[in-house]
Image (cartoon, rainbow, N blue to C red; front, side, top):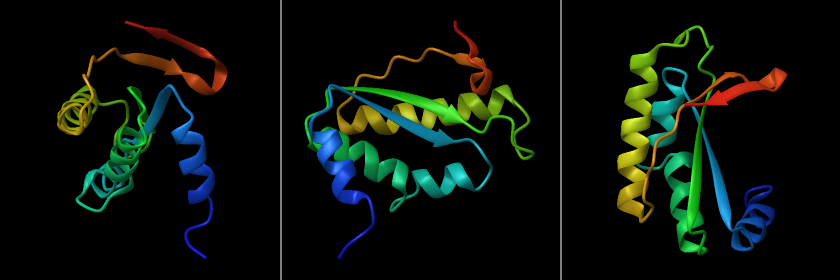
Length: 109
């Protein structure tokens, strides 16, 4: 009967004004998501196909052992995801959100 949750994801996305695409920063995780058949690509394409005009991209797991808040890693991810979502049809504007989001302590630069 299909992938669990996909029906809810499609229904919710089709009614959304804005999509939040969360990208894992971990080495291997990001690469899997942005690969040809990865979920990052699939979700961005699906949101655009369903008519969502704006997308916010969050880079998650910057605290993982393989990343350790590395600025170069963040910039690599922002560049690659930005390039992809532009090809999909979005107009990427990068704003850095940093801090401990679990504690509600963050700021935009």
